[in-house]
Image (cartoon, rainbow, N blue to C red):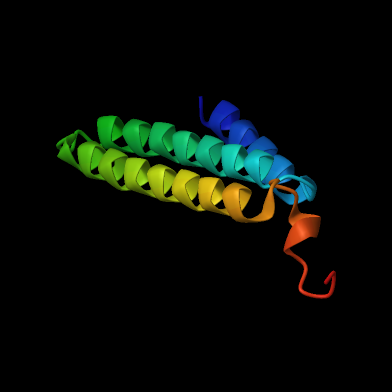
Length: 93
């Protein structure tokens, strides 16, 4: 199970580092990494028989992070017209 979670985390990091065109793909890879961390955190808490209220706090913060990311993405699409990172360059006046 640990090897599978490690492979999932490495694949999420690879997608995050390789996506350089669209901001939405980068956002999806960050959300995927949050889900992998949730799975790892859940397994850690089950293994050591700790209260699972910490998972609820983690989920609340990850949902807030996701909604804030979507709000920033929608605001950027409304102001720039697309979600490509090349449109954010200051030098392309």
